Length: 428
View 1 (tube, one colour):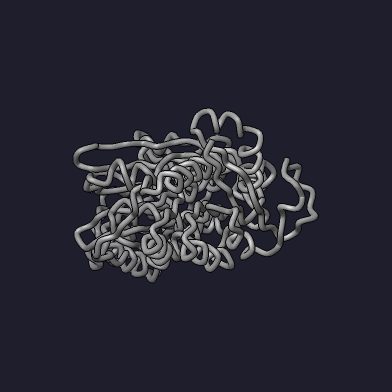
View 2 (tube, rainbow, N blue to C red):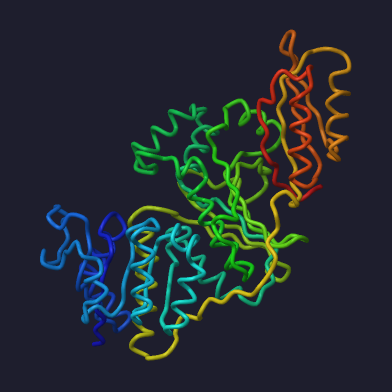
């Protein structure tokens, strides 16, 4: 039997579940892989906390550095989350020649380039399958299976909290605040859901997907993001009438001006595979000239699915240690240009509350036209002295769409720009 000592930084939902898997399923893992995976030390904030884990209390410590330095720890698992102190600790482990497995999407998105370089220099693995999509295998397909495919787009639902909320609003007519409260009660949303509903969590994952999908580093700071806090039942209803479902998408694509990554709500055609993804499920849709399209879907969060992905990385890292040779292919990046979001072609759904008077539509069309944005369709609903206009534009650079929106907002006949949501579709 080949014994590998494991040190953990963190024993929360994912770390605790991983420890249970390593102890409860120890014999099954050994039978399948030939590996004797042993938990050696675990760094936590409060060693005295009751955790219901089948390991000696003496394994717990508040000194994370001691876990890295322990000669019986062959590989490190980081499941603390955040950039500090996780970043420096992971870097120290890599520089010490110990492979690292992490589920920390924020850390990889923000500092992944330097950490991957440190792993390469030390000749050890840095694995992060669980950083995107929880239990969905997506990191390996992008970095290994599809490494030879020139992908054109990677986009997906990568935050279960927001997808659950939007699903409840769409299917049950639930108000945003009530859907969020339900998500928190079910454990899909944190007590402070800002990173989820504001789009920051999805932005970190978008940065990783873009970097791996297109082979060029896209840092977290290059991913503009907007959340779902402004989405209303009114727009969900209008979108449905127009043949769309509203989803929060992470979108990475290879444009004429370079690689682009972004996160925002979109109107997605009912016929698109991602439109049918409901609840807290995650799904990632990949497009390329040879593969056409691929869809990866499954549980995107939670202790069990995420720990499964972490455990898979642990097994790969352990095999590499024992083989004394590279098992997991190293991730490398080539220089490439990154597109400014303003240059990326987008199309918009705009809901306007306007005066119900002759000539209003002409003024609005003129404002769009002067900004070089053409209107694809207009639908009007009268509401007394006011009218609601639903406008869908043709593709135009994002900056010109923004200029058109600003110009329309200045018109006296426009009482309110009630909503502006991007539209994702194949047609121009």
